[in-house]
Amino acid sequence: MLSALLIITFIISYSFIAFEHVVNINKAAIALFSGVLSWIFVMWFSSEPHLLNEALMHHVSEISGILFFLMGAMTIVELIDAHNGFDIITHQLTKVKPISLLWLIAIVTFILSAVLDNLTTTILIVSLLSKLLPEGKIRLLFAGMVVIAANAGGAFSPIGDVTTTMLWIGGQVTSVSLIKALLLPSVINLLVPLIVLYFIIKKQKLMDALVIPKIEMDSLKSSNSVFILVTGLLVLIAVPVFKVVFHIPPFMGVLFGLGIMWCITEIKNGKRKDVDKQNFSVAFALRNIDTPSILFFLGILLSISALQTSGVLTSLANSLNSTFSSQNTILVLTGFMSAVIDNVPLVAAYQGMYPLSEYITDSSFWHLLAYCSGTGGSMLIIGSAAGVVAMGIEKISFGWYLKNISLLAILGYLAGFGVYLIIS
Image 1 (tube, helix red, strand yellow):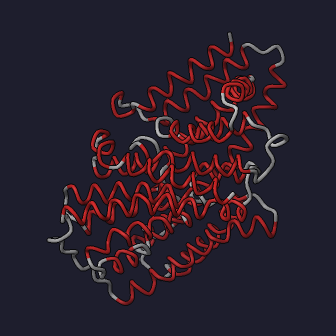
Image 2 (cartoon, rainbow, N blue to C red; image 1 turned 120 degrees about the vertical axis):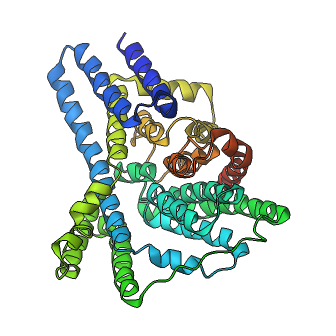
């Protein structure tokens, strides 16, 4: 009875989340409602609720590490943006030839999403495209490529995607091993669709009449922006280093970096007028971070923890293993599943289904899970946070993306998967 209630609650809530644009209810609200309701069911059917309270607090402590990490990282990125740090990148992109812009946008997106995260990078780059390209098919094609590049860049980095961060924090992967294993497959995942799209655009002559507008920056703003940009990127890059050297959780490294950035920005902006200073403060940055997304992850992870505690995930793992003899088959299908279902609950479910006692840290299972869940979402516009963001900013329809981008994403996904199998 309990298992049936939890599964029904999960399926119904995910139906509402998947069709958020139809029901007009924020997915964070549905996720929070579903997460708490699932635990109410678990407690209600238990004869020892005090033991389950202990289990709940254990899950909450793990979840809070992920949420604090996201909050800290998003705040640092917002601080950089408030100081026009990303305008440096915009300024440099306006200097390139139109025919080379696709390659440069894709590569910059790939690199930034590995250093920052794919969600934030997509917001920045797609917003940048609105300044560089006119409305129409060419801008939508670029936005579709940004989604693929952002997800590919986030897949091999422990801080590039929420799911890789979850696996990193959960102890399933280590940062150096993850990068070594997935860097080349992720690059292939980017290059295959990028090359195909480049020749499609060239054949249709979509860039021939394109003129990129020039964006000027005064030297004072440029100097200050560069300093904040470099400092912010350095503290984010230092997070995995802190984990390896000092053995502290990633969220502690991010919070330490946020403290550094907070002190620096307070000192840099100390002479500004109070009215102007507010727009460059951490308080301003905190108001601008994507809080609904953080609450969405909280609700999702609460739902998954309820399924794990009740034993539903263990039963599902046994069913998968009995149905498919090959782990690679399970994982490649996981990528296609992540195009329909958000990869956060998928990875959280796998973490609950497959214990570290049987699937050790840095095994190929976890590396492939990071790759498949991270890049598989590119196959549909609703399959990843990056896709949903691009969809909202550029008003990309589900059908248009399916017709013009999905096949490119599938080619890249399968090519990267094949490369991993060869090199491993």
